[in-house]
Length: 423
Ligand code: GLU
Image (cartoon, rainbow, N blue to C red; front, side):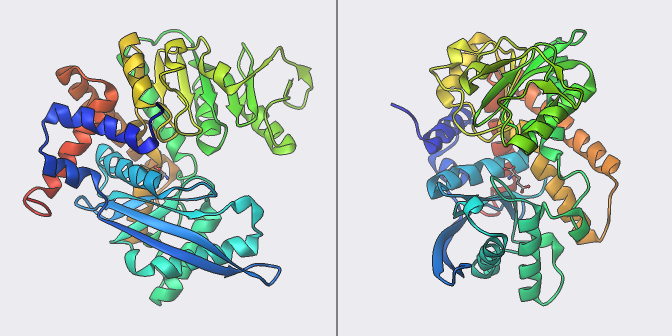
């Protein structure tokens, strides 16, 4: 039977709990959210009617600092799933060594069906409903699936109005003109880029051009494709979006594909490179085919549950970097591990986003403005240290990279919590 997202995350957690021989009470503390806040947001629609949208915020664990994590706007947001995602955020913050705990929230809405005015009213209503539980030292939301800097700006403004003073550190992922940080826009991909470079070195794969396939062409997928192309040591041979994939043996050229996607609304159908209308030899394929391509590095940057025990035996990549949250299931993990595939887990591979969120929060708290170079330099330091620390645990304990990352995170959280917040 197919495992739910929560069951998958719990299995991943249990593998680490076994290594650490955690007690039942420790396991309960580490997996149960501290608080769940729910609300029904009512807004006036453009046609004069009123509509209600369910919303929630999960606050998982704050022994290491304020709750931190994204807000998603999606018709299928699910509270149970958000609980697991909030737990992953606690672990991600520990892995990145930033002083936050985990949170996640959402509104059950299809944002594409709302006008900009309705979206703003909804975002402001969320803040009014949650204001007592948010704050720079309590809980600091950020963008996630289908939310962006404009929404973060509205939310920051609403919170500041209610607080009676400008409070930029209540939210991260804001626009640069509104106290946002340089380098936050492509931070998730940048963090993954540093981690991939470390993994390539650790596996002794340097010295030849490596092939890459990227599933998903949103912010993270597009930027990682672009960064790997710019690096010069990688050829990104395939990219996809929800409608399909395109494969070009000599490399896809991420910027041309992005231009095409903006014009046509999808990347399937592209076969001209740039504006010179030079026809490129290309192949269309499904997302499934992309995942099973014979490439060195596979980057799932779209949705949860993409690589399962059913397609894991067909995966040919040597490295998988999880840019999405939870794209490789627990069942797949075990198969890939046996095959010797290195899976760089989400709580490490996509931790760049929340790490630069921390830099943004820090700049806001101290009224500083950092250059993009400074942000990238600090991000690189954090990512490389996390990779080395987790790799050391992996080698010492002879476990997968994911289990090692969970072990590392659990140890950090327990160190902060024991004797202080829990027995
Ligand atoms: N939503 C992102 C994540 O899942 C970023 C969260 C944040 O910046 O707080 O990691």
